[in-house]
Structures are given as C-alpha cells and as structure tokens.
Length: 525
Image (cartoon, rainbow, N blue to C red; front, side):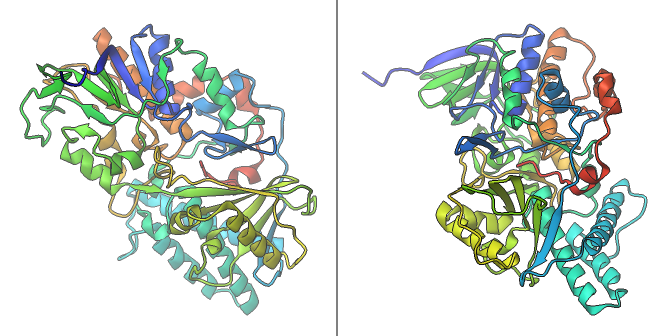
C-alpha cells in the first residue's frame, strides 16, 4: 500500500500570513459576511513584523515601533477607537546630546543648524519625483545628491572646527537615514523615486502599551479558529494562463496533481507539510524577503512580477536593547548621537548612529545593512560589551556599567521575514511595487485567483504598518466587489480623503510638537 493521501480542506479564500496585512484582509472579509476563509500563519503567533518581547518584565517592541502620522492613518484610528492612545498626552522636546569619539559635546545650536540644512537637502531630493526638473547629470542616488549638497554647504563654512563637526553630524544623519529608509547606504536609494513615499502628518506616535497592543482588537473581530498557527506554506500551486496576457507560456489551464489524482480546474492549492488547502482565491501577504528567496509558487510567477521582486530593495534594520539594574544617564539626556570620527565604517558598531533612552534603565540603539547582518551573528553578551565600550568612549566616562541584559533583533536571520522592510533602490521604481500588487486572474474570470498584500505592495506607504494594513483591506475589498459584480475598485487606496473624513473630530485639533514631527523618524522596525 502507498502513502496515505494528504487531507484536503476546501475554502473560498485562503489568506497566507497573519501579519497586519493578513489580519486586515481577514477582518474586512468577515465584516462583509464572507466567512468561508482561513488564515495560514507559519509562526506560533500573529502579528508578523509587529512583535513584542520582555526584558525583566518590561515590554519592548522588536518590530514596529511607532504609528507614523495621525491624519489619514487607519492604525491611529484603530488605536484611538480602542483606547490605546492618550490624545491629551503632549510629548516633551527630547534632550539630545551629540558627542564625538573623544567625548566632545557639540553645541545644540550647531546641531540644530546642521539638521535643518540636512532636511532641506532631503526635501530637494523628494522634489524630483514630480518630474518638474531633472537631477544633476550623473547623480542617480539619494546618497550622491545629499553628499553633493553637503560639499557645497561645507565649502562655505569658514570655521575649520565647525566645518569638521558639521561633517560628522551629516554622516550621523545619513546613517540614521539608512535605518529610516531600510538600506545599507543611501547611495543604494533611487533619487527620483524618493518622493514616491508619502508622509502622513502628525509625527511618530508611540502607544503606551506598545504597538503589539493593537493586534488584539483586530484579532478579536475574527471568527474563532480561522487562524491556523504553525502552518508554514511550502507550495502554492495555481493554474497558469493568467494575468490578462502576461508573458506566461503555459496553457490556459494547468493540470495539478493533488492527492494522487490529476485535476484540471481553476483552483489554487496551498501545501502545508502534511495538509493541503484548496481555494477559489488566495490573498498572499508573504514578505518581500520571502518572495525574493523562495520558489514557493508552482508554476513560477509571471516574469514581470519576478523582475520587479528582484529589483526592489528589502533592507535589514535591527535594534539593540540594553537593560540596566539602575539608571546611569542624567535625567535630562534622552538621546546620544554618536559622531564617529571617520568616513569609512570599520567595526560593525560604528554603524550605530545613536542610543536613545526608552526609560531610565533601558537604552535602544539602531543599525542597518551589512553591519546589522554582522551583528546578528554575534552573541548578545558580546554585543552588550561592545556597546558599553562605545558609550564609555563617547561620554568620556570609564565607569559606565555593563548592561545586565542585552536583547537584539535579528530580522535578516528570521526565516519568516528575511529582512525588515521595502525600499526603492537605484534602478527600481514605484512601478515595481504596482507590478507585485497586480492581482492575477484565470481565463478572464472576474474574481482574481491570487491577490497580493503587504507593505511592499502599497505604492505610497511601503515600509509602514499602515501601508500593509491598507493593502490587506484593498485585497479583501477586491474579492468582495468582484463577488457582488459591482464597479471595479481602485485597489491602490492612495486617496486618503475617505479615511480623513471618517476620523473623529477630536483628531483634527491635536497639537503635536513640530519638533517631534521633524526630528522623529519613520523607522518601522
């Protein structure tokens, strides 16, 4: 006798991934009485790159950190509706200390002046996206353009010491920008496409109970047992001859072997170890890193999708949490900017641009790219010891204690993400995001057989939680509209007016500190 045939479970819709995009899609389907769906999640938890942990009973966010913007942001609306944010809280101005490798403190006025100049350089880069004027000849990346602006600016600075300090500040801000953007170096980021990202107004909002607290209100709206944890998808078999005349050379219908039998139809089959799921449609929210590395689709995706997946960047951004038994920084220090006295990075730790105070006994450092990947391979204690050396050097204080605990994220090594979030690199464009997001149809059927969602599929809010959430809603809405044979939906959801009109009136009167909006960043993980 042969091996027993795997069990086949049939559903109208299968959602792959229980990150915020998958949860948003599931919630939207459920709200419209389309309950014949399941969510397959490879991990033993929901949330994806929204992930929390604890250090000595203190919760820390390993993934998404802030809600980026208020007006038009569905995550802020969800948090507000569920009592997760205090709208009366007024954030104080952070006290930032910028120090050189010999412990010299930079005057705050010089720091502010340099930062304002840097932001002007960055805004000019964003302006190229409109096509109103062309970049300088031979300049293709954000890094090249900003360095050109810096050189012109510093050439006019008369004081040698001020010029040197400002150069160090600019270098620090560019390292910071790699964490914001999600890349190794800003020369990797396409200059013309920088402006494709749309920033929502209102600054960065931290939830008192952590970003992960937003998962429960979403999860609680879903039907019981619709999420199947520990269900890693190993293969997605779909009929080819799809996608409105793409470059696929396959026949209109593909013969798929399921359970030992040859089946010819327009159904998609999702394999999870010893179980097979069958559906009319799937919503795929696999991260871009997984799409880049995995031959999970059979047959392969159309070539135009594969090329776009290959062109987009998927960066690595990591956090280092340092926990201390007692405070050692002064009460009036909130962040230490590290002004490394070299242009070339030697040791991995030289990519850390700052340590910020989460609270009196917890510090947070950020780093990105190649150095983050090196850090991920080290033991936590080695990382904590190295960070102590760095702090002692920049604060010129040999008595700074070693942390009692060090916890680091390792998003590149995480087999379920293989990185942090999407960026548009040199040679790629917003069109690549739209190519990946484009739904796939079989034989001109109205209802798509595969739709895609996730932060990498939103043309304006890539790299953000709200971009992933909106893409999940849009994918679900497409299935709902197609089922009802209604008018086609604009699935990119770039018009925020409907979101803004639905926000409570109280949001419109919130006065967020201008400094916080400007100096806070767009870091997501």
